[in-house]
Image (cartoon, rainbow, N blue to C red):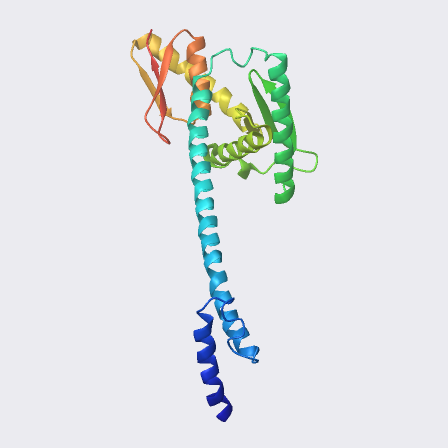
Amino acid sequence: MSENLTQEPEMTQATADATTPPDATPDAAGGDAATPDAAGGTLDDQSDSAPDAAAVAESTASVESVGSVESAESVESADGGETDDEEGTANAGSAPAPASRRDQLEREGEVAADFLETLLDICDLDGDIDVDIDGDRAAVSVVDSEDGRVPRRLVGQNGQVLDALQELTRLAVQSATGERSRLMLDVAGHRAERRASLVTLAREAIDEVRTTGERKPLTPMTAFERKVVHDEVLAAGLSSESEGSEPRRYVVILPA
C-alpha cells in the first residue's frame, strides 16, 4: 500500500512532464527510468494510433475508389458489350481479320484459355478448351473432355451463368492485354444450339412480317441472342431494333 501511494505522485509528475517537449526535460523523472518510459510509451501509442487511423481511412477510401472505378468500368463494358454484340454486321462472322488483328485475337484466345483452365482446376471440374477466331472476335469454348462432361451448371438458367463467366473471361483478357475484349464464350455447345434455334425463330418472324406488313416484337433476349436475330433480319433485307431495358430488352422486326 505504501509503494502505491509513493508511485502515484511520480506518475502524476511524469504525466505532467510528458506534456512538455522531450528535449526540454530529458530527465524530468530523475533516475526513475520506468515511469517516464511508461508515460512515454502511452504517448507514443497515442501518437502512433493517429497515423494508423489515417492510414486505415486512406486505405478504405482507396478501396472504395477502386471499387467505384471497377463498377463504372463494368457498367461501361456491359453497355459497350451489348452494343457490339447487338449491332454487329450480318457478315461479321465471315470476314477474315487482318494479320495484326488476328495476332491480337489469338493472344486473347490464349489468355482466355489459361484463365478458364485455371478456373476449372480450382473448381475441380472437367472440360477441355477450344480456341478459334470468328470474324473479328476470339471464340473460346469449354467442351467435354475424355475425363468427363462439362458441368451444365456452368451454363445456368437461360445462360445466365455462362454470360457472367464470359464477362469474367473478358475482364481477365483485358487485364492481361490492356485492350477491351469482345470474345465469345460457349460452354457445352449451349450458344451454338441456341443460335440455331434463334435463326429458325427469326426466319419465321421475318416471313410473318412480310406477309402481314406489320412490326413483330419478339420475346426478351440476351445481348447475344438479340445480335443473332439482328444479323438474320439484316441478311433477309429487313430492319430491326431493340426496345425495352434489361433484362426485358427485346427485338422488334420492322416491315420493309
